[in-house]
Amino acid sequence: MKIPQELHFAASHEWATEPADGIVTVGISDFAQDQLGDVVFVELPDVGRSLAAGEAAAVVESVKTASDIYAPLAGEVVEVAQPGRFRVGDRVVVMPQNGCGKCARCLSGEHIHCENPVDPAAICGCTTGRATYAEYCIQQDWLLFAIPGDVSYDHASMACCGLGPTFNAMQMMHVDVFDVLLVSGLGPVGLGAVVNARFRGARVLALETNPWRADLARRMGVEAVIDPTSETALQEILDLTDGRGADKSIETSSAEGAPAFLVQATRRKGHLASVGWGGPLLAREIVAKGLTVHGAWHWNHLRDGEAMWRTIRGSAGLLDLQITHGFPMRRVQEAFELQLTGRCGKVILHPTE
Image (cartoon, rainbow, N blue to C red; front, side, top):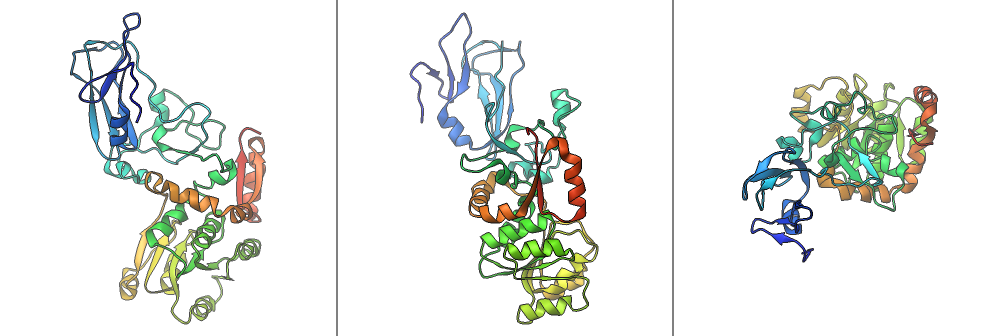
């Protein structure tokens, strides 16, 4: 803990500097910051506001609580610092969507399900900055995820849709070395499920009609790739699992019939997670087999950040297989055209090249 000798501290953990040209800088102690935990929102006073000593001047909200910050002395606010957890030049992953940082979902780290999403462009008075296929975008700092120095940009970028949705599914289903996991769809997200499952030591089966991606998945360690349009698809899965079905299944294809097929292909008392937005599930079939069903969109970076970096660090070879192509941003049309052919895994865009 840092206790600078040149600062004057209040009992409520605010500090103030010695006056310089009549101006005093005010902040909060390291101890107070440590007790707050991860900060998700800061409300600062308006410039020009007059404050009495001991008056509530600001609010800091964290994943734990919301706390008032009190003025340690009387005066007028002449400037406020730009609040932020990062500095210019820091390497970060930008989380998708724009949570409010205040609702119960955001405070628990589940910002993707925010009850009151905000418009960062409107807050900043901008007409651009929301697109993510760009060199620059606008995002709140609590929705940035610091990249460790030993992780490359390409691998770090997989913490979004490349690995993120299926990582969340794995977390919810507690996939481990004792499981047989069935992945429906081997597009970029489905291949991410393969990476996540292989890192956890699970045995992986997959459903896919695209021969190019089926071959890539086998090179990534998938034991068997079954054509879901085949009349024998379900029997093939049962034969590979001693007649029981997969312990856990993940739907990533958004194919209309895929979720219903996974209900049939998952064992009794198994788990099924859907990342794709495919067709319906029948409650009577779910109940009859005692299945647990999970909806998995994104992942909780406030809670599971270290687990994500362990996955990325431990899957470097698999990620190099999953990322099959890279393009500079100026060739984005070529990248999309390649994606449409299906003859690729994850395609990366490099905005600064």
